[in-house]
Amino acid sequence: MTLMLALVATSTTAAYADDQVNAPPTTTTAPPAATAASVDDGDKVICHNVLITGSHFTEKVCAKKRQWEHAGDVSKRTLEHETEQSLQRPSGH
Image 1 (tube, rainbow, N blue to C red):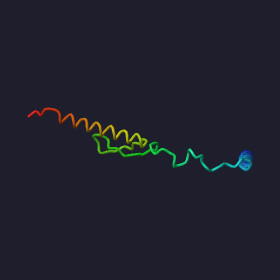
Image 2 (image 1 turned 60 degrees about the vertical axis):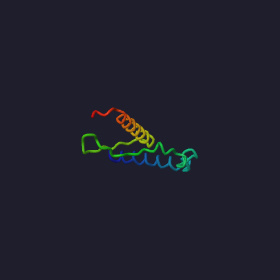
Image 3 (image 1 turned 45 degrees about the vertical axis):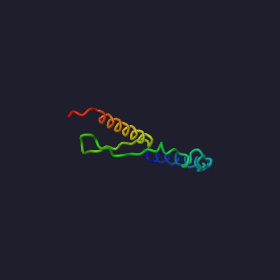
Image 4 (image 1 turned 120 degrees about the vertical axis):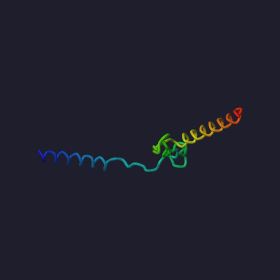
């Protein structure tokens, strides 16, 4: 039984090696559209450790660069709006 398994393993390995020798060469150059210079930085994934509200713990959150930028813009606009609203309210004094 062991001899039979050894023969099967050897023939499989030899067949794989023959396929690799007879296989056409692969090119290692990328097409111009896929070069690093043309990749949009907005699609780059960035991870941040974000503080969990009400805790001293953080969790790792990963998102694309443009998603982080959008979240920052929304947060900034919300803060500006809330500040403007609080300044327009009559004081309770």
